[in-house]
Length: 425
Length: 170
Image (cartoon, rainbow over all chains, first blue to last red; front, top):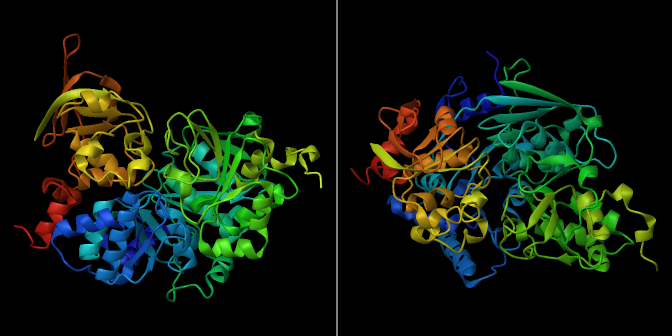
């Protein structure tokens, strides 16, 4: 019988010949990711009554959500995590400044083809861009994995998305992913394993693919798989933690739904407040005044994102009264951007560069908006109150649009930035 | 097990940021204090007036967004008896089971129920009872939990379930 990616990998990990959607299997994940929530998870772990973590080698702990600590409480939390990983022999620990956990998981070679990854973070599906099965879980479940190395998973139905053709110039994978989330809705992939196929995906570089899998969380998907190919394998060279074995769906596998898109018709889009599926063509909101622009996060804080933004900003200035906050997704991205001269461009145009991590994405620190202010962001969520106050609006867009909007002081695509905005030397 | 309470009705796609704001995730760790932020950015009245046994009724995709379990524990702290929705976001659904908070998928009941209705939920029978003077007795049925996860729910949540399973607790 033919099977989807999810059916094949879950059968393999559960040691079964085959599984069907709806079946519940018990598995030992290859990787269990947690972040600043590791201290509360450790607290739950202790309540279970087990003293030692069952498989310290599968745990990866990355501090990223509020780093470096903005308050004493956050610092205490980090301190408790450092003590816990040391005491439990969790070697894969990445302290403050290394980067956003999903990016670090990729750079450190844990996000691998054929890996089964669970994470106590809803954007864990990001690793699906490498051909992993990667799903978010809760804190209690992570505590139980610490105690038993096991978790139950329901075999999901699968949704196949096929993207024909290639994206046009000035249209990014962020536009493609937001377009699909807007089209299928915030529950368009609920409980499902979403597979991305077609030239519109294979033509993308690895960093652009990560954006797509990352945003699958925003349509309720369990994971967002992109078949690994030479682009993936090249990216993983000298990174992979262990030899990997890719898993591919059977060509005649049965899907609950198949949805097709034509990449050439996708245009630049924006997600309006206060839901990610509130997606409209950028031209419909062009001219909306902004107070802040945020370039970063696990969605769009990689070198190619920063580079594309810097190209737009080069020779221009951030508009008076507007803040542009730039946060590289990791220390590796930070160094690469430094070497490429990109960070210099940001400082010259008037941007603020913060240390790698999640920053203001969920309202913790490093550029939260005031009441009544409008932010345009490369992040993945614009929920009411997300950035700290419910009295503010967050628009989501590509790095190109965020950079151009910072210059104009209003939402705009770089193609429509006039030459008048060029700085006079 | 029977749950009796008043209905608090909300719409579609209620996300975890409005159930429990992200800015508190690493500064608030006491469950009672979590309860004091429950639905803070959705319905400021809720945390002041909710009574143990009350039931949240919502549209599709309840609990979408972050994986934060506090979005469940803050409601448990307030004594919420059950959540009835057209559908649940998957991590939120797991978090409900793991904290023994009944997450009931029943679109018909959601259509019929309104805020301030008095309802009774019978988990064993899989029934929701609504008594209204104008329409009389209304009963809505829902399927039981899959057997494989019923054990977790019956044990009072994932942690007591795991303790039993590991033999830490009989």
